[in-house]
Length: 263
Image (tube, rainbow, N blue to C red; front, side, top):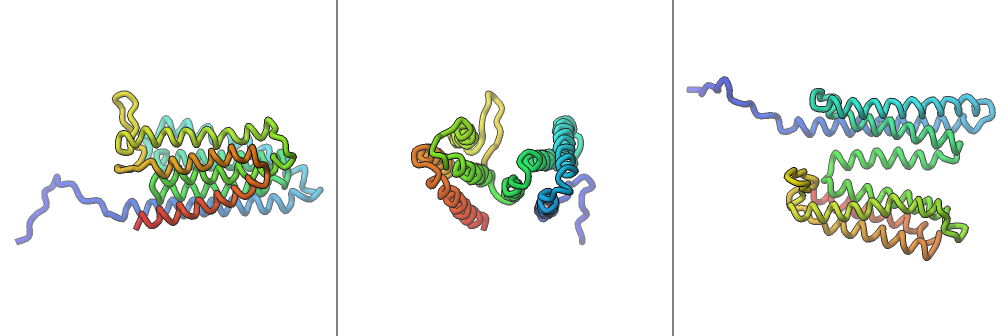
């Protein structure tokens, strides 16, 4: 005799529901990244010609301003509606980051002409890669990747700024974001390790990393890039140029390690 289900019994959610959502997010992020790269390629092709220089420059200014306004509006809507709207809860921050990315790319092309195209490509690819890592891997790997990708971009800029052999105020400013974030990441890892991956502020506890989190890898990452920054000031442009490739290798090793851990 078949047993009847209770009317009020909760139904089990399909196990692949969350996985399907992640797949859709990853596909959308990759599609947006490809479209942005294509847009930069088309802009770069025509922006270098005298006939299209003025209209494209004016359009880039408008795109930067509109994207900044949309990013601000999206952030406000996400803060207000994230608890009421599933759309803003899931897509609010990604949309904000997308508009900020478009704003920064348009401004760089407006300000520095086609010479800024490699930097814009780097920003787009870095943003997409970080989003994919955030969706597919542990938060620990996301923080490591954020520091490492920032390190790669920082060392690329420093390799040019140190070419004159003089540490300029601009070079010092370029050093600051990576230095500050490396210290903050190490402090975050230390606080989270005390409470099994969570951070406590008074009576409130927020889970930042997985249970059983080990801060060792974040300590190593932060220490490596801080040491490279200090050594770069002393050794100059050649050293920081090779540090850029070291960052790529470091990220590859970390990706292999955390991919194995997923299995």
